[in-house]
Length: 94
Image (cartoon, rainbow, N blue to C red):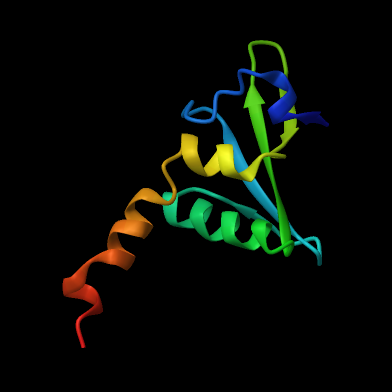
């Protein structure tokens, strides 16, 4: 298992990269959508799970541990829409 952070050039936004979440019970979730990835990010930040990625190549696919969650969220823009929704006065009006 390789470190995504140590590659220095991990292709977070490449559409062929497959993201997986593994929780403490061993349940594996394929992170298909942005919402799935955002939820997994929050779980991982709380220490409830880990995020892994498979980067397919021409002759083999390499597994990676996503060991810098902030870079993961930044590169995939996971918090942009979340913050906009959270700060929207229309949604939060009482």
